[in-house]
Image 1 (cartoon, rainbow, N blue to C red):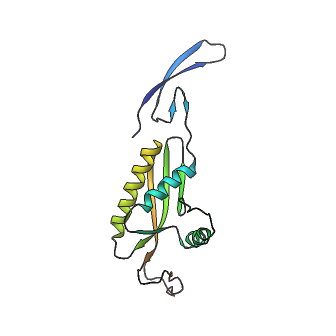
Image 2: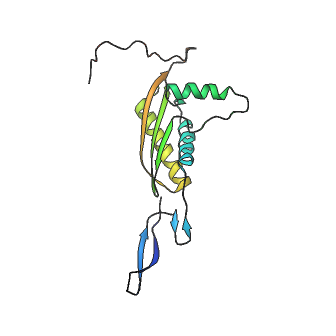
Image 3: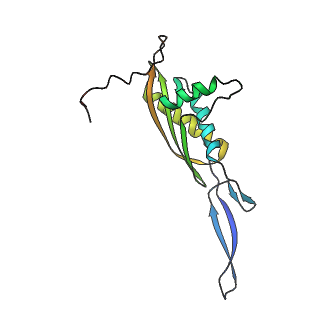
Length: 163
């Protein structure tokens, strides 16, 4: 996704003449004409939209962020927060993405996670030129289309059966 370009820099040491050094830049975001910086919120929105496009994703975000998002959406004129449930770390050339989702019941979670990863990596790399190093996905819940959207968090076992 990235291209390698040669960048020529002139360096002068104290008491010495100037020396030309050619360095390699592995990013289209850094060139001899300047540097492009992409904010975390841009990558977060791209990843959020790409996640929502995948069939089988019911919602993006954990319980608290979805509850706040639902309240926010009820305010007249409020926009949907596309980066809800997505956190990113963005460097000069790379990005790492963490996504929290609720999956539809009956969907293969392994296939869903692979589809989300593929879609997010393609979208972020295509639109930003950043290399996506990892996409971590946490499935917080399964949505049952039976008229209820409640999370069952009150019935935790007294002892843990598996570690």
